[in-house]
Length: 104
Image 1 (cartoon, rainbow, N blue to C red):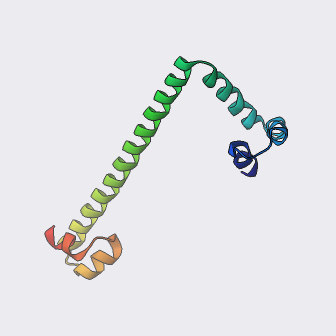
Image 2: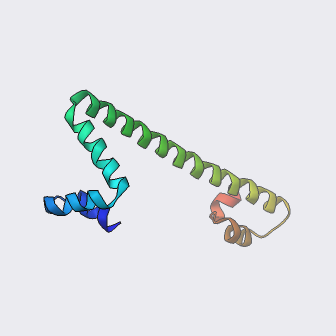
């Protein structure tokens, strides 16, 4: 981790950067990609678009997981409520508020 931080730190001396690159295969590969992308405006644009796409995809995936977990909690709370469990206990188990549970 320390090597990566030094690699991306603009204040790291060039000599140290070269040593870090020689020590770590992953950093060598990153340096190759940086060199390739920065050499061509079209390649840089394609790289940025890909990164934006991956970021958007990860964001949507995170949101979907969060929504799925929330739906799962609601389903569990409905079943618990139907079984006659107290709202306070349902809230404790699911993390849902009493207001949310009462609306079910």
